[in-house]
Length: 157
Image (tube, rainbow, N blue to C red; front, side, top):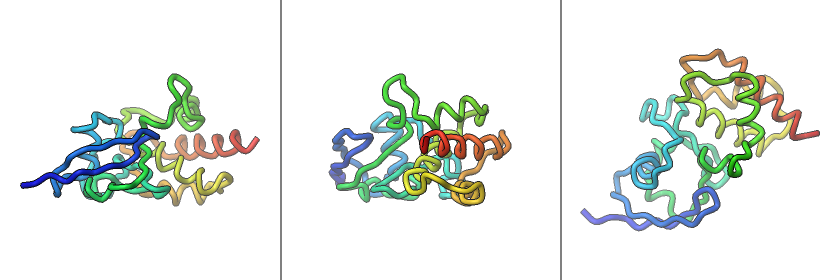
């Protein structure tokens, strides 16, 4: 079986890789590129643990074939912080204790970033609807929602 050559930008770096035609973007990110922040929680697009931003849109990397990333710009959790300087969302998640086991946290952070990139002043209802595609089995969602709302308020000021 022949491999597919893909050229893309991931976290502001030009990246090229070879993949099998049936490999998912999540598999390539984790197994080939060693970007292991995105998690596989369900492999069916139901939990949001594998969320990435591709060309400005929030997507589940487990549902995309890696070959579909050709020419795209992708943001993963590894690209959120600037060195040791956390993204404001990451800091608010820490401040609000909006995480426990950490499996869902990267997906929530990426989803929240995608929301705030589109809408810097969301209502609580908008945050809850936007994050509805991300499942957490450990924490209550309230701390996550508060962290997103506080980040929005902080970045507007």
